[in-house]
Length: 187
Image (cartoon, rainbow, N blue to C red; front, side, top):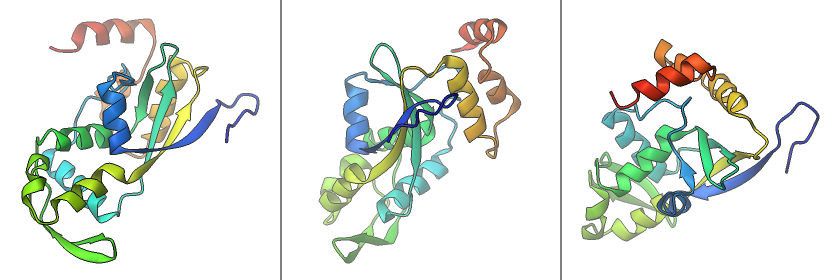
C-alpha cells in the first residue's frame, strides 16, 4: 500500500528472500554502496549469530530501500543484514552450532558449517532452503525520494544505533561532505 499524503514520501511494502537478494545483486539491480551508508562494519561474530538466528526463524527484519531513476534499488537501511547473507553464501564465515532449528515441525541440528559445505550435512539441503527462502519485509520508497531524504531517513532509522561521528558525517549530503567522501573512500 502506498503512502501518498502531502509531504510524506511514497513507499510500498515488499517481501524479499535471500534468494531474491542474490538474484537482484547478481543482475546488478542493487546499490549497496550509497554515500550515506556505512561500509560493512559488522564483526564476524555478529554475522555468525545473525545467520544462525535467521535459520532459527527468530529474525523478523525490515530492510529499507529506494527505487533509483536508473532502475536499481538503493539500500537505505539493512546493509549489514544484506551483505551478511551474501557473505555467508560465498562461504566467508560459518554458522554457529545450533540444535534448535525448526524445519517442517522437526528440530534439527546445525553444525558450525560454511554454506558451500551444507550439502555434506544430513540436514544441509533443508538448512540451505530455509536460509534462501525466508522473507524480509522491505520498505521500498519510490523514485521521488531525494538523496537528502534518503540520508535523513538513514539517520532517523539509525538514531538509536551506535553510529560513530564518521558514520553520521557520511550521512550528510552537502557539497563539502560529497567532496570528502569521494576523495576518502578506498584510502
